[in-house]
Length: 406
Image 1 (cartoon, rainbow, N blue to C red):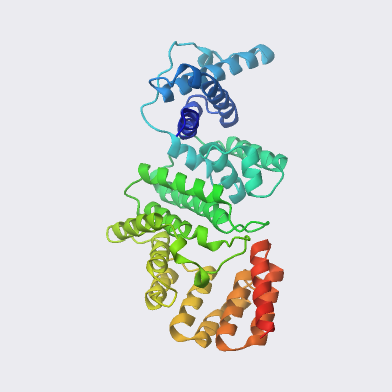
Image 2: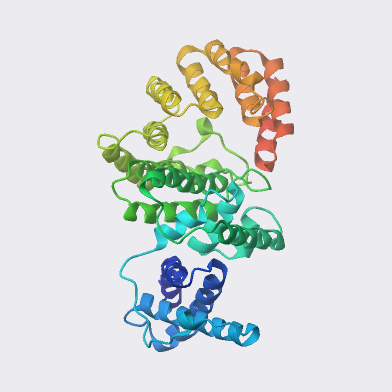
């Protein structure tokens, strides 16, 4: 790795720690981020020339604090307000002993923010992605994403949220929100909901990086470990999910020799270590399902009864329409397509999924398995009309055309 790349990676790793330290001292999220960005720019200029300092985190914190003090002095001159306590120049700035990044992550996932705002702010403040990179990943104009991030910071400020870990009674609930945000970031990278590309590797990679980091901070939490294992096991298939022409390749047609076996081994080891010792949660169960898929040498060799049993457990501990949808496919593989269609029937009246393209596609697949070609063709066509993902639309349309031509 080149020195420039090594410095870039180090700055990215340290950025949220430095931002947390500056927010803790001054309280203003937006102003603290501006000061940290200036410190990062200064480091990117000086470190390649002068060498990385002995304490790079302390160097960045001291530089960012001095930049913020300069900002406050400038504001004082303009507004003629006394900022005496903040403006005291006490010489070298003490580097905090702890890492405030986990507090920063909790703050970015504050319940006063909408889901999209939580995701955007997490990627910006904790992930270190630029506003342009986040906008490109979610296929929105950069100005729109900039407004979303700015509004998120303003919302946090207006909420009066303190830069501190939530109280113990609230901490578990807030951690669930954090994990859900990381899960959504990964899923958008693994299967983009819109646009010309099936995958957005930058997002899935960032979600894995942040979840690895969260696991280092919370090594005893079973659901953090479960989420990381789930991401690794799903991401291991990424290269085989996309054909040379960008087309979607379904699981039963994938070249399993193209799966990332190192990622599979790490994910399987992680979930195998976690399940016996932790209170079982939905991410752990989903990771176990992914592990069964990844350990099978072929589609026919997949242990579908075990997968169905795991979906039964998931349905008990975290029931949702999507769990019911995925469980119905497992039912079809174990008990036949008629049983799978019966398991799907209740979802068709659920307003949350009635027009969901993956429900329509799953139903079409089970109709195809049962020999109802006309029904399957109609289902694939309707599903293709509903999806906003171009690769999925091409796949579903192609499936309908191939069936209709038989």
